[in-house]
Amino acid sequence: MESLTTEIGQRLAGTEAHKRAVAWAEAKLKAAGFENVHSEPFNLRAWIRGAESAEIVGSVPQHLAVTTLGGSVATDANGVEAEIAVFRTYDELLAAAPGSLNGKIAVVTQRMVRVQDGSGYGAASRIRRSGPSEAAKRGAVAYLLRSLGTDNHRLPHTGALDYQEGAPQIPAAALSVPDAEQLERLAARGPVRIRLLLTPTVKENAASWNVVGEIKGAERPDETVLIGGHLDSWDLGTGATDDGAGVAIAFGAARLIAALPQRPGRTIRVVLFGAEEMDFSGAAYAQTHEGEAGNIVVAAEADFGARNVLSVQLPPGAAGSDFARALQQTIAPLGAIFDSRPALFGGDDVRGLQKAGVPVAALRQDGLDYFDTHHTADDTLDKIDPKQLDQAVAVWSVFTYLAAASDVDFRNLAPPPK
Image (cartoon, rainbow, N blue to C red; front, side, top):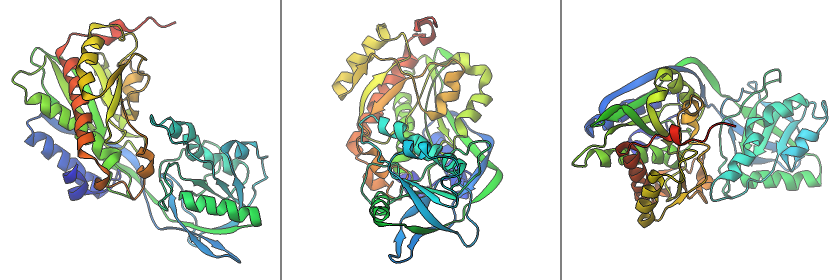
């Protein structure tokens, strides 16, 4: 964690910093004795942040803390200036009539709910992902949202958007939480006008890589237990909790197992995915390994910070298995429980493998404060509690070792589809 966040820092996909991170990862894996260490290239449409600013103009001029959403188009060189239309909820925006926002900047100030398992983020993600296109359909010339975060700091949270086909593409940015609340108060007093300047650029066919290293199985090396984290990060902080922690967890778990007197029967493969934040690396990995899906016993990605693992969910049908009982007994002393509900999601970068039929597991961490710093300039090494990170590595080590040492076949345990 210290090496990655200090020697490399931010690792936005498609940048020279990310290229250095790939070389760093290969060197670390090789030095730790991993085998078959290599990088798998793929191309992406790299989005690069430029200058970004926003200010209220008129009788109460003041600066606003904003950050451009990943994938956003730029304003023109002079920026865009317009009156704002404030919506306290996203559903209020969706209820607005076509043409009702002509020439205005749409602002959604809905609050994200703090939940330990992170489900508040999932519930609010459409505000960032789909909001710009929905505002554009109604005539808006730009879009601002209250950051998808649970903090009260004046540090906006970035993240990717998804422009909808057929909708105009308008500039979009996130406001810090205090600034979103400031706009609510001002808008209640009368019209508010904002000047917004965003200057991102795009590099077509930029290079990225998924970095791979293996601990070869002693008896069934063709059967693979795949674990990973994503090597890329947003560019505001140094990518400590998102996802330097996941890199450290997957690497650390596999390294501990490799140091045992006897290797487990199956191969453990660590994949450090290269472009999770912009949704490219999982699909690239699944496409490259399309013919191999049947040999991957289980897959899981660590991508929820560095706090304790609270529970582990296994693929459907595994709750009553000997594997589940062994797992439960082994993680209990570490302060984690076995959750009998089936894992429905194993991480963004293994989603493509899951669609191809690979069983996934979910090692669910304490995320109560994860979204205080997520995607912000405050995502830095000092936020990591080493003792909690140790516990996460320990639980991941147990799960990975048991999956690699057993003969469990999660596909055979799965109930038949209805």
